[in-house]
Image (cartoon, rainbow, N blue to C red; front, top):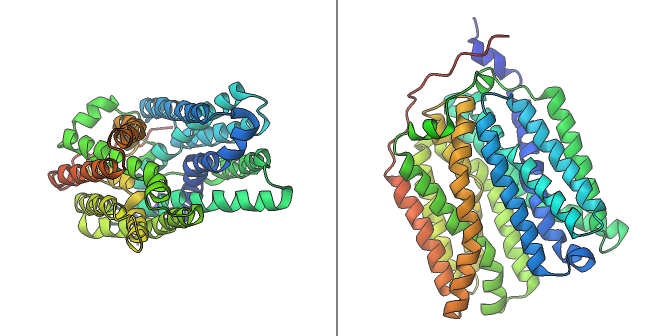
Length: 407
């Protein structure tokens, strides 16, 4: 029996492609970001000397990430996704070396800018590649598997820090960055050698990303659903620790345990949510995910156990897959590199909301004297995401895949 060309091109290497994508996504997009948060206390004591300046480094990283997303979106269909991913990983590896060797704040800022730009070269094109390289009825599971890298990155970064500090002594934050650079460089080399997307994922150039976005049915409501989710989830994550320690009087150890629950459940949830999407559809799964997260914000306001831990576990389940659900929905209307182009455009307002959320949530806390208003806002934003997503049409393929580029 003859195998269809697309199946023949992908089936033999799809497992390796997804494994490399998970590793590249986790190390490039998740691992490096979580490492900075874990090493911040020691980096501040040695070089930064101010939490305000530390926060500014995070802003540099986010601005560079958003600029990188815009560039990746513009390059989709013009530059091979293999090249974009490998350049992104290489930038992350170089950034880690720069951070490890930084003698002053200015060099740290350079490292964070390189890290943000490099991270943009992994998640957006990898999501598009995975979506285009598997059969339609397996996309949810594949995209869910891709996002397990985020949750794994949280656990890996914490374990790496503990191991390095145990072997080299407390405060060995520079060595942690160097080990991370080696891991990212090895993954980059593996992608150069074996990362082979399907022909559909590397098809010819696409139209303007903004034009493509406007061709998606109900694109405004889709964007609102994604932006509202960004605002709600970032407020929850940014202030959960402060809520527990200042208003629930929890210990730092208990707070760390609660955050570990989020990381662990996100790994499980990545797989479960993807399979739900294959069975019930992207829209329905997104509505369910946003609704669950809405309840979590309200549960956290109980400020006592077991509600706080239940909130963390439930919040982690859909946390890392919401972006993948957006990619899946887009994949029902556009194909190949067009997915990366459109996803890049819709990620920009998502990033802006993500940047504004902590400031808005903090202002509400200062103005009201408690975190109640802050977490009510988070839940309201997540409820808006669910409501907006519920009005979306059910996805169905409208555009055929572009023909592969001739050599």
